[in-house]
Length: 205
Image 1 (spheres, rainbow, N blue to C red):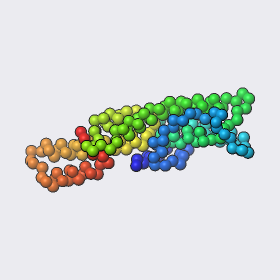
Image 2 (cartoon, rainbow, N blue to C red):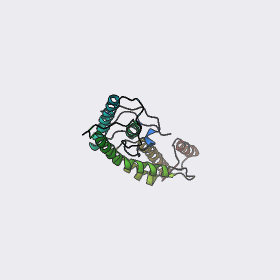
Image 3 (cartoon, rainbow, N blue to C red):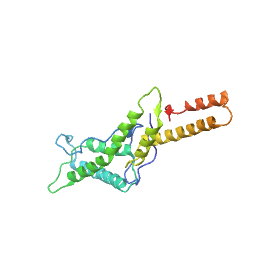
Image 4 (tube, rainbow, N blue to C red):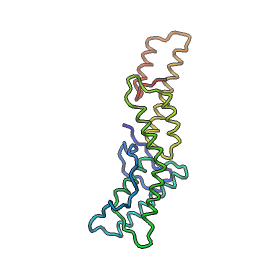
């Protein structure tokens, strides 16, 4: 699988949540919280719920600030924070309290920014579906450039960047070997083919 990269988000103002190695693939695509279908646990303390929501709202606002400032927080953290908001008990609004509206606006903005990531991940998975002849490097290089322009740091983008770098190195080695004025030896060809097996996919120029 593709492991999520280490380190926190751009500004580091929100805490790193516990996430699994494939968390970056979990797109935060659900509706914002606050609807009538969100049930409040029986006997829950309103003050405690309010404090939890306030803390989460601060984390979400900090992440949104990072996104809008171009600091690129981690996408798996984005998914985790949004999931936490959706799993939270409903906060009862007081008269004149605009909190629910404010946090819905914050989450909606984050979801708009993350929409491009979801689209990119879908294309990434399509490109890497098992192909008996190997993956094509040209579309993957274009996909990498798009991935670098996303508003979040995505583990799959870093994986693809590493794969492209290794593939480029292997391709350059192959071209150098066959451009040589001397005929490649059997050992050199075997070494070249063996090195291709260290790549996660079989590249095609």
